[in-house]
Length: 89
Image (cartoon, rainbow, N blue to C red; front, side):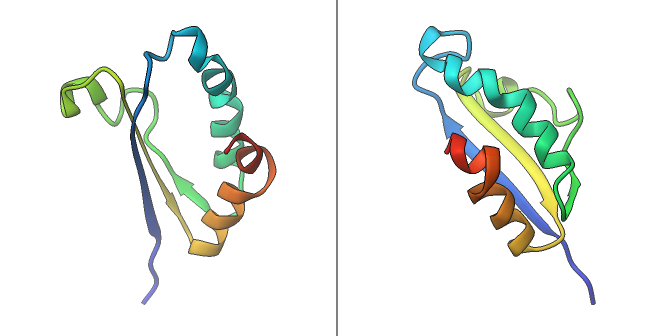
């Protein structure tokens, strides 16, 4: 029996994404997301709008939520803690 790993992040930002204090985070989002999608073991993440509206779902405009599917915990660990994403942490 094979399986994949679903990874879900949920956070509440201290400021809205367009606030200057969030610039370091938001400036890296597109590049980190592209890197994830090309990383070994990556399977899927919702496309733009496919996951719905986080504000409507969670009732808070500061909610940051994302989900991805990976082949293994080791593949996810490598992506999270090494390279660009690891540096961004």
